[in-house]
Length: 339
Image (cartoon, rainbow, N blue to C red; front, side):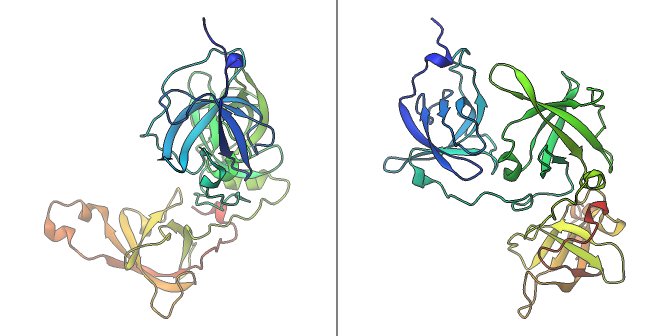
């Protein structure tokens, strides 16, 4: 006879670390370190996760120790009580998990217990991707792709900050015309009002209406200024000494070499930055790494690095120009309109 979710027993206890901070006791249908799908009973008070029964869409064993128990990283999906219990394999050690995912453990002291993110930018994220503003007016980065079957979008928060407020992957359609054109979010000023839907275990139900688009478009449409974006240590700006717009690059998180290789961040780069690997020297002993300083940017064309001629490959990088490396945390006024 087929077993339903409502008929499941939950004999094992564990703990869930939510993205909003609280660690809560949960019950499990079986050991989460096994291959098969595990069902999880989540109580009230579990941060962003509503109470109910969930199953492991995918899971990965982070640690397994005789004395200290297990730690498992996972994605959860809601289950309806009348749904059939599944016994498929969801353990996947090749799964590319990230900081957005959830952790469960056999003991509550197995978690690092990092404080929850207070705003977008607390964790490294490219501010030039898509943004959303939810019904509470909170802006956060999102990832979206077209759903060819429905003609809408599949959308989810791109960071732990966003996932702490909206933990699932959502379906979305335009609030006015329903169907979303293929390149509707590709333009610099793209902005859509979307009706989101969430799967509740048995059906897709209406969730919220979001505005989704580029940061510059959201700023232009917002009735109140959006919170300032703090790039932290991940991203910094280079301003040409002779004048011109500042340009954003990444590559500043704990560089190990005596030069810093600049990684592009902006969707459109100036001509001097395209087609070449760019580097700047590390700070001198009398300079602070985080502080502003004047630097020479060096460039080496990609075609030289890819050359089959060793002499060409070994050509030294040449100076591109002098720039001010702005201090850590600096964001220029009107940054969303740059690049």
